[in-house]
Length: 329
Ligand SMILES: Nc1ncnc2c1ncn2[C@@H]1O[C@H](COP(=O)(O)OP(=O)(O)O)[C@@H](O)[C@H]1O
Ligand SMILES: [Mg+2]
Figure (cartoon, rainbow, N blue to C red):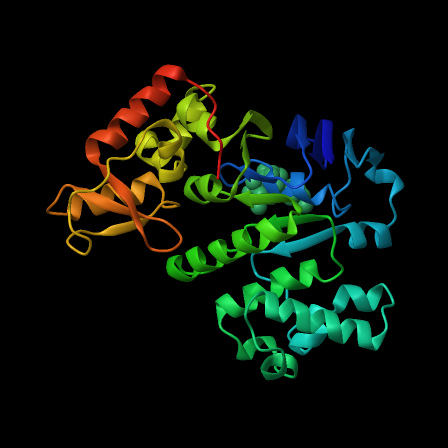
């Protein structure tokens, strides 16, 4: 859906911020642009919606060069969220959320309806907040407003530049989870900038790891973790990459490979985990458990088996051996 074709960006005479990057972003995918500060992530993002010009190469959106799209078309097709949420301090929450629909000339009733839908989407009371101003909201709430503002005109694509970077870790996890839940329904095509490998693993269907304007590796998180393309990638991912890769595997995937032991332990005697839990969480529960195992429960809270350390270990060894691509949740 979004295609970078040999894209280069030079600022002024000689600052090459982006250096011959080619990248395909498929419809409905979250692609995380990852890398250290100054590696060109923001520049790469802002060239898509015309906030920065392209020095060389081309970017296409559904096959059409973005050079041929005007500002109104870009706003309708691409939502934009930034770290400092970019809310207008002297506009009410409702006015902020409906900025783009206003620019697009929507009727008053349509805007009101859309505002109410979007507030419901993020679990905020539309009436309560309608006439409030951004400074009256918490950081997490402001960032939710920033996200739904970008969704207001229902664009097929979203650009998100470290959207949750200013939030403290606990709120941030919650907003990330909430955003992923929304994305499962909306299926937007998303370019998401981050400098945080953990965030990239969690949010990304794919990760594009950048260094000095160049693309180092573009792959699924599991591949970046298990088969880093070079020393830079291995170093950026860090020494605990096996532990990190546990976070992208879930019990459900383990169950596709093995039959779970039917538990002989009475329900209630040990910790239970949902079958959608990731293996890193499972291991930490097991390590705390006196039984050295945990019960796995289904949607109805029925125990469907148990998982112990040896089984998780076997699964990781089998995966490493087979080297098969792993489906990212
Ligand atoms: N408007 C600008 N003028 C000149 N240089 C810029 C400008 N914006 C960014 N740069 C430079 O381009 C490089 C990439 O910046 P940026 O895309 O903001 O990186 P990141 O988002 O990964 O931190 C940096 O060296 C930065 O100093
Ligand atoms: Mg940046």
